[in-house]
Amino acid sequence: MAKKVKHVPSDFSKPKAGVFHKKDEAKKAKPRLDKRQFKPAKPIDKPVAKKSVKPVLAPDERAVDGKMPLNKYVAHCGICSRREAADIIRKGKIKVNSLIETEPGTKVSLEDYILYEGQRIFPKKKLVYYLLNKPKNMITTTVDPEGRHTVMDLFKDAPEPNVFPVGRLDRNTTGLLLLTNDGDLAQKLTHPKYKIKKIYQVVLDKALLKEHFIAIQQGVVLEDGKAPVDELAYINAKNKKEIGIEIHMGKNRIVRRIFESLGYQVKQLDRVYYAGLTKKNLQRGHWRELSTKEIIFLKHYNS
Image (tube, rainbow, N blue to C red; front, top):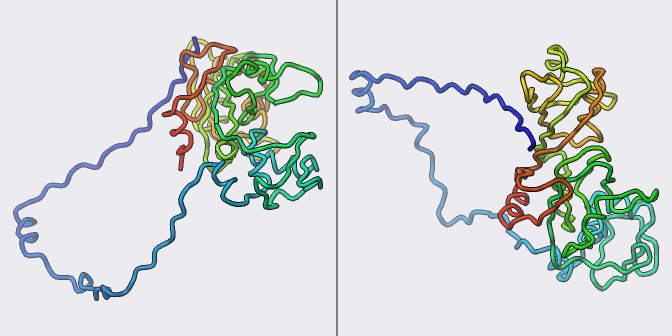
């Protein structure tokens, strides 16, 4: 059973209520008039400008009713996120009407003949969302050129097997991983501005010293900049090799690099919380479909 990370609640003290005397009440009985309160009223016949609100359409409806950027089209086909789709397009792996297209913003529609790896692709009509408790020794990718096991090997019998992982967990990292064919949601959950909350349980090769604990809390500086940490705690006060760490950064191997920069080796790394989702009742190597409530929560996460 995964151990919970201890969080130390912040001390939000409330201001004391003021005491009102009779003199104060007398003053309140005869309030002074403030000329600033009397502003000229706006003419009632003047129309108030309002922003037009466009109806929100599902991905497949947007594809049918009009054109969309090529990278969004590819993402809606369940191949990858929109950001990854842009990279695929720039590498010349997408053909539009028999011609290689390298501009992600090119407008396309369902009438266009779009090929990826020699096959025509279409936007998915049914969006699916799977939560996996990833085991060790699996690559977080759809295909591995070296023939190693990937997380996709676990989804061969899924109702909709054509999904892709949202973000990355390295080969030896275990824990929560979301897989979907919803390119828009994947784009949101991997974008830095949404500050997606992630909690990891770490087992080190030796006890974490107090000065290093404080240094991590303050944010250690790595080769690609400072690494801010939201929360840090010893999981077990008697065993200071086990650490709970909460972050929102999505940089590659960020947790391992934080500890390695201070001379520690990460023996075990397990993601126990991701964007409001937990591993409750989800065994290692198993997956489940998200509930409707969880999907709605993710789509409105930090909106």
